[in-house]
Amino acid sequence: MASRDTIPFPQNDGGRSRRALNMLEQSAFSAKLLEAMEEAVIATDVAGNIVYWNPFAQELYGWSADEVIGRSIIEITVPPEAERAAAEIMALLKSGESWSGEFKVLHKNGTLVVASVTDSPVFDETGTLIAIVGVSHDLSERKQTEAAYQKTREELEFRVQQRTAELNAATENLRQLSGRLLQMQDEERRRIARELHDSVGQLLAAISMNSAILERESSRLSPQGANALQENLHLVNQINVEIRTISHLLHPPLLDEAGLGSALRWYVDGFSERSQIKASLELPDDLGRLSPELEISIFRIVQECLTNIHRHSGSPSAEVRILQQDGEVKLQVKDQGKGIPAEKRSMLKSSDGTGVGFRGMRERLRQLGGILDIESDANGTVVTATLPRR
Image (tube, rainbow, N blue to C red; front, side):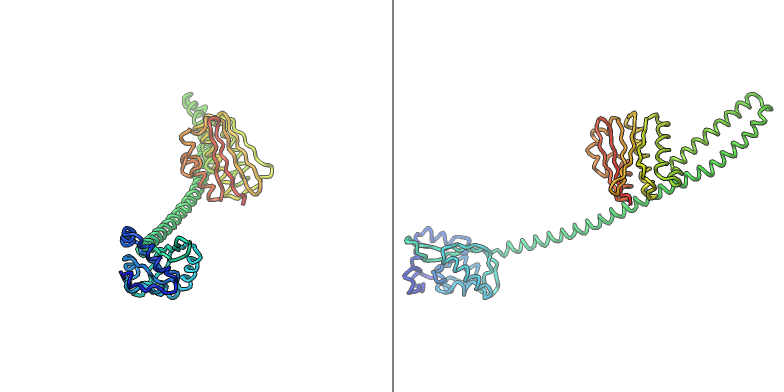
């Protein structure tokens, strides 16, 4: 470092530059402290000429103290494109304000270094500005780390976006498959119902006709044969009723022929008779015909809800209501049973919770843009399905 005897102090500043250096080096301890600081410490006079330059300033800027003492700080450390900003900072400091921030400083080799800079004015005992002290350190490594971190983060975000897009595409494919499976299930039920009604029904009708012929000849049979014939006739009639019921439960003809209202009346009345649960149905007078997809979905949801009530709730009654309002169809099925078990109630809002039946309902509704809401406690369960009419 240049000796204080060789420092070219300005002759027209009233000795302020020398006083500034005296203040910086007022004790051996402070001098050693400035030398040992792992920060670049630079002091200039009021005009911006360098009067102090510690070893870390040489490390940051590339210049030795002997090369810069007495020269303009702007000339040494500020790139041409930043001179205007540096002049504004210098004006701020001369007004008595401090400044800190990031600044691209110039290295001796011509490269730019991003540095954190804090500049402060120095006053003497009379309050006169005598110097400006700047403390700075190299941010290049931190900037490189931040840039590497940002790049890694962007790459990870890009991968997450890619994976999310893949998962969304896979989910959409699964939903389309699920919708197609539901459609195929309904079509298969319709086909089996038709086969039972037509093929098996015709065979039973033929058996009934043959049995009727035998019945006319029953006088020629033994008492045991006559009794067996009567039992067969009764069994054939019973089988015929059972197959008709199963066929209609698989796919009620009324749903295609007369619409949802008639099919639900038939089903709810039959459910009450079979289960001994008092079930009621409330329909709007102006329900009319809905789309086939809407009608079959509502019918299947009612089927699932009433089956759940019969199997699990212990309820003596069930209420089925359909409302129309604001272009929506709302189905509500209510019971007075023991409710869904407490450990499963927290899963009621989940698309994966409370069993296969509710998941199937939700998937049917999702295909049609509808939603399912389930409320349950110890006093019973209310299932509400809301669908757009169109």
